[in-house]
Structures are given as C-alpha cells and as structure tokens.
Length: 349
Image 1 (cartoon, rainbow, N blue to C red):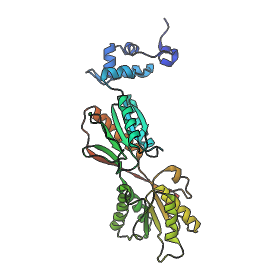
Image 2 (cartoon, rainbow, N blue to C red):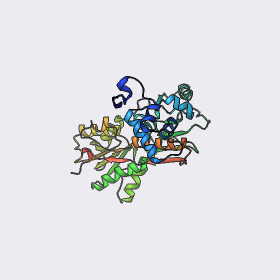
Image 3 (cartoon, helix red, strand yellow):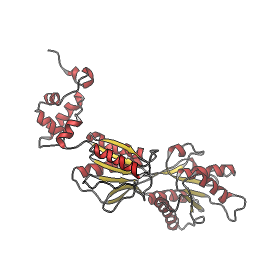
Image 4 (cartoon, rainbow, N blue to C red):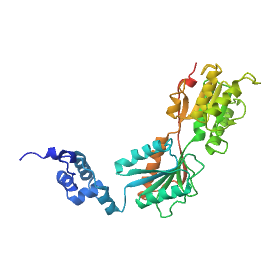
C-alpha cells in the first residue's frame, strides 16, 4: 500500500481535510482532536501538541460555521469606524488581525460617515452577523460615533475614540509623544522651540501642547512664544512660516519647530523653503503621526512621532480575547507608547 502523505492538504485533491483525518494522524479520537484544537477539555500537553502538529501537517482548517454553532460564536470581530479614508483604522485593523488570526477570528470592517442613520444601519448589520465583539474606532480621541451602542453584554472596546464611563479603551500617548519630540530638539541644542498644532478644541492638540510646554519647563528652556493653534492642514504650516520668518518679524525666529501633525509640518517646510530658510541648519522641524505619505515625501524627509497604531490594535485584540474568555480587563483608558522616528529634517548638524 502506498503511503498517504501526498493527500495531506486540502489543495492536493480539492477536498477539504476533515477533523477525522487529523484525529487519525494524531492517533486520537475525533472528540479529543476537537477539544485539543479548541483549547477545551483536559489532556496531556503532549496530546494537544500532537493534534495541532497533525492539523498543521495536513493543512487542516476548521469549519468556522460548525465551530460557531458548537461554541455559540461567529468568530468575527466587528470594527465600526467613521475614518472613511483608513488613515487610523487600517493600521489598527492590522494590529487586531495579528492577534486574532491565530485564534481563527476575522475582523469585519464597517465604515460609515458621521451620519447617525448610516452609523446605526452599519451597527445593526454587524449585530445581525452575530459578531463576538465590537471595536469602535474614530478619528479623534475626544469624540465617539453618533450611535447608541448595544447593551446586550457584547464586548465593546474603543480605539482612537472617546471612552465612555466604565468602558475599555486604547489611545496613543499624545502627551508622551510630544515630550519625545521636544526633548529631541532640546538635545540637539535648540533653544527657541516653537509649536504649531491643530484646533484648540481637539484634546489631542491640547495634550501635545502640554507635552511641549512641560518638557521645555523641565529643561529650563524658553518657548518661542505661545503655541499657534490652527487647522490640521498644510496651509496652517505654510502661513505660520511666513509669520515666524517673514521680513517684518519683531524677534529672532525659532531655531526649531514641533508641529502637531505631519501635514502642518510639510506646509511649514514648504513655506521655509520658499523663504530660503535651510532645514535643519537654520531650523529643525519635527512632526507628529508618522504618516509616511507625508513624512517620506517631504524634502528633507520629516522627523516625526509614530503613534504606534498597529500596536494599539494589537493591544485592543488582546483585550478582546480576555473579554470573551472571561478574564479581567482594565476599565478606562490604556495609553500605548509612541516612538520618535528621526529623519533628515532634524539631523544634528
């Protein structure tokens, strides 16, 4: 009789590998194989390892529908967002998938505008699909989606969105990231450090301003005037360059500028370039977000703070797993660390 190893995967014959085949290869019953693959029941670690190795060898993929019927789960996580361009949500979804894919859980993304009716319809569609949990992902940390969330005991997490009282949320450390950026400029020997940021009504803008101001105080360094709040736009940065470095200024210009996002930083650099100001020789520039489409394309490439959105999603995925498994989770906001990515706009000359 010929050995059967060549029929080991579902793609070899076009037929799906069955749990019975996995059990036969591992030398256990079908029931034991099922329990081993679903982390259920009591058995020797070696038995569980042998079953999983057999499943891997055969290329076994569990039938999620049948498994869901047994465990009363859909093995899907709903991700509801108003970030229709995906700037924040797509990296978060990547982090979620890195944690959940190995557990057989898929992320179902549903994007909606800031329209209460459309948001409610999207939420209802996710509920109809019997998702095992829900992640609410927004575009700003002080505002949630315009919808009343279900109160059915469904695990709900908030990422890049306002976290209600008693809720569980994950946000980047805006204030800590601003500290990283400002300390970097101080360490370069810059002493007239300005700050351009977004609208004062955004909590993230206020937190970044606090991180900038407190870091200067800690280093006994003076700010170059108060923070300049404005729009999250290149236009705001461009106009600020003319204001700070124009011929009619009444004081020495800054020798460094920390910008509240990468769009502002890019506009600032465009304005400085038009005025003949050298970067980083005359002024060092640091942004915030590490939006690579802006940071890498800026000339010179932009030093900026990476918000760690993939890690943010990974932490949320771990929180979701803990919630569905009945393990304790920390209520309130968990701030995840940011990272400074140094490029040529602040290179030490």
